[in-house]
Image (cartoon, rainbow, N blue to C red; front, side, top):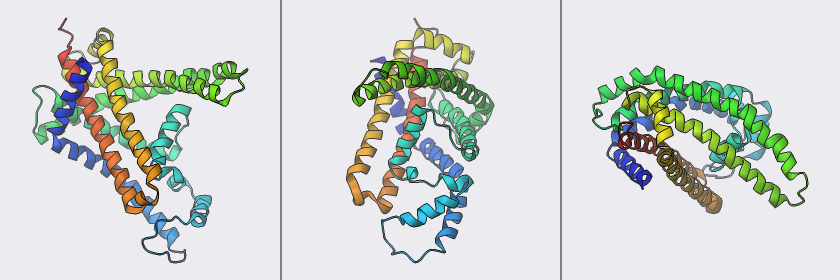
Length: 308
């Protein structure tokens, strides 16, 4: 119940902070705009040499796309069918579970996103903590003040996850998976084994993210930064796990709703409708990240280190 109370308290905090939500959406859009403009200009140049298309058409010229991808390099090579609709989050999830390394060209936008979120976390934690400021100028200063520390936490979390991929992931989906499925004749049984291994690895990756999250919270709310986070996680592991599962369930529900709508909507969710639904999903995902921050702040404050 403590996890549920923390989640709904965090949700209420986000609902009462529309300016913070709008600022986060605007910042994330601004980080993507330069890359979108570059991609858009190159696509326009490629389309200019194509025969005219029917305005309002919701079909994609597959021949043109294949030809474009054949000559695409750098950021152009990321323009694949995996970016359309539900395929985008599904592709990202698949890459995380299978350990697929991102293209080198994506390291720049990913680095910018990391810096942006290092600023956002400082802003958000200051806004959602008890007694936190609501002044835009003070929130901005909080974001700038904690940004270097949060960049360090993000880099440490990335390095820890890379180690997990190089060791645990390689062991689980290499020799262990091969030995467990060597005598299996059913693809269903092999798939179940793979799902179980995904859950084990996902739990480890999620643990790293949780440690990083509470390190950020403790850096703003606590007195001793990551040391308070380690002690808190050790003492309150059940409440932390409960809140994590609640947030994971909500995110999974949003993910499934988007997938079902995209799969069964057919042409009715194509074109501008598909783009609108996709942007709604992205916005809700950003809102849920803020809800996660606010909920973790509430849990840390409610079960602080000084409390029995």
